[in-house]
Length: 430
Image (tube, rainbow, N blue to C red; front, top):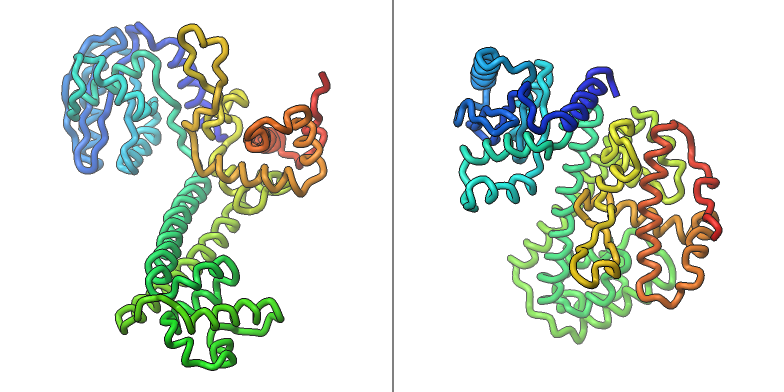
């Protein structure tokens, strides 16, 4: 963390302690939009100084905002100014960078908090931009705001690429589902039972001979050469022979030229998408090696390049977290429970799932691999299961617990800049 970010973080922590009821602070709540933003200027004591200021999403508009803020701050004797905004897509980022580069104090307000606080302002649930800017300012005056992280360019690049990869993975999944549930389900339903193996061969069948009648007219040797690139042995022949046999008695619909065209387009596009994902993965690794912490994450059992990149992007600077509980909240692994009434003492807490879903998924996969393939993690896992083997869902619960532990281990190694040590997994004896 560079000096400017350290100062910003300390200022934020100080702000959280002293903002309530302060007469020194001028609060600027901003409702972000694509073209025009709405600002509200008030104090922590609830006094309104400027009900509405509309400014353009450009430099001239930003300068207009600062001019009004400086004027009102000087006329009312405020020593400190805090800007707060609710993130809306990526529209808030140019304004945030502009304010941070001008060394203004900037905080973030959660969209969930804004929604829940909206009704408390005037007893109504209706939404408009002017009220939302006042809503943002009201939350800041209560200290219900978050630190606005301004990461380095390298970390921003990594997060952007991982976001792009998620988009392409969704596209890939969409094409796979359409091929299997739309084309095969109609024209060659018998192929579905074999679809889980050798997907390259399955795609070749879809692309070149989707219609079972076309396969039935071929000799097996011709069919084999058409859908394969090399002979892999007996198991491959048995599988393709079964597919070839099933084509002779298939109940699939007859496929026309448009269907064959669609099949070719879907397969070609799916291959292009996968090639793009591969290129993104190469670029992600190229960026990850620029971080000294990356090699320490790779030393953790179950952490491959993909999981390490996701964890690295999520944590960013490890020193911005004060405790492990804050790190767990980032992933949504903090425990929560609805405690009310007679059964409040017997309620079992569950994970909140209010954090990054992709981070939770990646770490669970890492925990699954580590608990089955690494002797240290396997011993830890077995020890945790002792006496609870017959409990329903206990293995999943313990893997979730291990995944949360992996996140804390990763955070610790990033701070200390040291490789994984199995001693961190010692189970406390009762």
